[in-house]
Length: 198
Image (cartoon, rainbow, N blue to C red):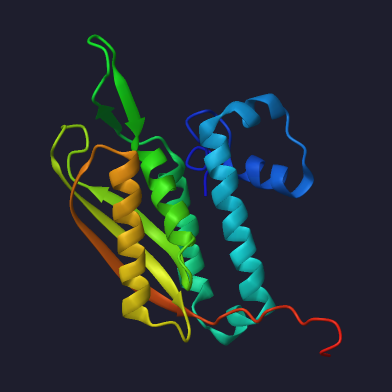
């Protein structure tokens, strides 16, 4: 992957932020602390690293239980979802004000609530439609992986419900449809063994 494709609009690269999570060192920590793009990237990279570690601990990669292609697809889409994307206009409270939220912020919001649904973890997420046109019909296209043993239809419906609720609260988008596609089933990580039960 080229450094150009890996670089956020603010100038930071995913490699720099990943190294910052590992070492705590970066050339401009003040920028990272104040930059919404960097903070969203750090959050996503951290959650991805946690999931990857859980999968590795369960030897899912060697068993071919969904981590290879699925994990690579997340990495491939992470750069796109961390970019600001299109501006989404908001209704101003005072005439003359211009208020917008970014597509990237909405996708990060969707990812955060989807990852919080028990039994699910987010893959790719997209907003389909003309978000720059107030009132235009928008379709949310979300891909998720479900942990083995979880009821797939119920988890997908929970994901759809959470996305609908957060977009209604936090945005002015006209959501016409929310498509949730289960693209993989992952082995559930075992809880850590407690002392005295070994």
